[in-house]
Image (cartoon, rainbow, N blue to C red):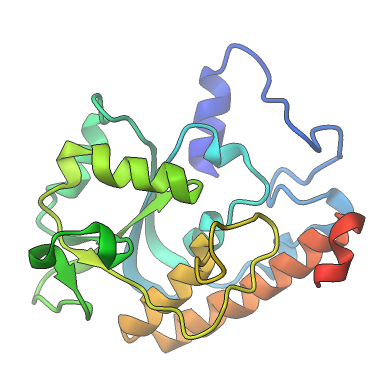
Length: 219
């Protein structure tokens, strides 16, 4: 949400998209009558999350990355650039306190980069890099970011089909950002944070769909 405020301040014209006439809560971006701000959980996750967001993603009410940010004590967000990454982003990726790990399907990564468990390194906090956008946009960020190519890749294998009905994925097994975050937290041994995020996501999804009558049959 902080990134959204920064991007809005830099914008020379208002961001207008489908649903822009709806009166929205500035805290959760849902229609004001379906606000979920009173349900924001306590941040309990010790793992850190870095959201690398495709242009315009931070404006979308359907984005679920911010739900993870509400659960994680340490979270960061940057707008993606292929050739001009922000100095603060590069500094974070090189911060000795963190251990960067990209979250992305294994079939897109070279075998030597693939991780199957969250690595443990004394004195370092896992920094899970979430490529936040559509699946096509996330693939472009993964392939085109030279500054990410040295980091290992943790693939998430969903045990069930996605419950996300707010956008259409290319395949049923593709999870949304929050669902991926739940699985990542489970792998990191943070069951309390995973459960909190799961309940929060369910509440978000229900209230989002309440504001979309044409989607009510998906609830």
